[in-house]
Length: 325
Image (cartoon, rainbow, N blue to C red):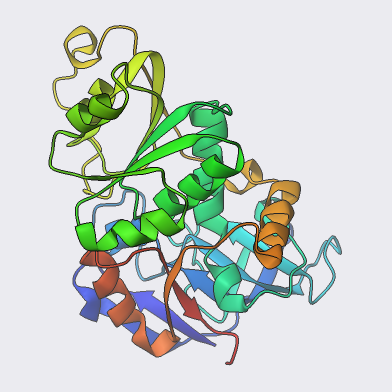
């Protein structure tokens, strides 16, 4: 099989396509024929040497979408459409940047859909993270106002779509006015150009602040996001587009505005139920929801895809489509 191998951290040129043996699934594992996979900042962190617990050489990829190729347990039939994510993929064991990957049975999420594989490939990690942030991290409710910091990331756009589905008012940030249209298409009510003082912009619209805020940029913007949140409101720290996630010399009383709650979310495959996934895919197929897919690459252009992700030039999810191979 063809796979993208990283021998050691470094630039995009360290990503190399190689022929590897098709992996054999151990007891309790499932082999997936990968039809598409999405790119994630987590893989960029691994390539840059910022991730912990990674051994090399390694096939990257914390998610994959495809069909069951072999399941020794007999739980899933060959050909069953499935998604998988997290659980050590691309770090502890070889991940989704390949024509085949093996994952534990417990991190398989089945579905049925006639959507294009490229569209389906954009969904798993993006939906799991956006849905988990809203439900577990923020306990989001209809009628609340939500601020998404880092709105044009794939998770940010997905969160906006999900938030509008449950009746929230959505404010979302972008550093580039050229990306505002992507947020408007996702249903964002107020697009904010991030000038470093988003809290002031939010409070000009909502003097008391938002009830909920999703932090996807990281620790450099977290204090400002906290200041944009009302008393008894909640900020969920989920993403780190800035590649910074440590708060140095953390003094809670000085750091947190009085009465504002700070939570975090980092989920696994079992946080995304088959019912939530199927409902979302059905809504996409019916035109009631959208998948924020930016660009599709073939495997030979994995370096181009990673370079675009690193440059922050994408307006949504980047996907590699293997369905024709």
